[in-house]
Image (cartoon, rainbow, N blue to C red; front, top):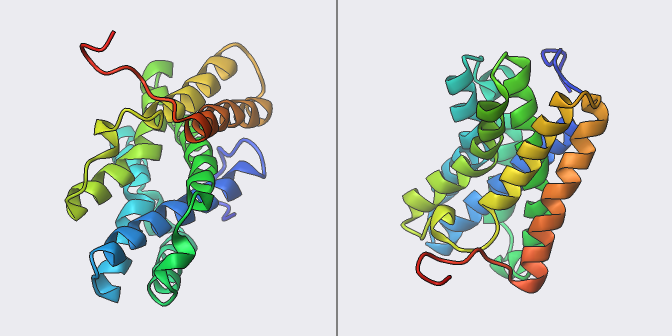
Length: 209
């Protein structure tokens, strides 16, 4: 990873962050091709989905917007869009993308919370910044595509991101080394999201309790 991440808490998670960005970019490009859009539109959707959450986070915590100063991120999103747009749609169906997304969601949520803490954000807002990082790109994608937002679905998606970011903040606040807290928290978020995929777990809706 580039050297402008002096706050990084381990060598693996920043690379998982790029992986999460790539997976989210894939979902953005897929939203465009489902509506039979052009490569330009697919590229825009890939970029906005991949970097949307992190951009909002950086603006809120007063940090430089990460992808503008990174030589990899925008290129990854553009390459992903071209890949998705030039391959058969059937390649991207099934549950494989859901599982990849679960890994990206957990890693991205922890990464966002860690960056917020590194910029002096208090624990609770820092945990929320992890959720923003992991979910806002998908929210923007769904709004632009005219699809139901992930916020309006009962499935355990935002909850999994909250578990990952919240676990990281709690562990670090309790004195656990960030390099250890990060994989533990990401594993917790992934486990919850994996259970939701496997067993269709969802939170009860209002009036259903």
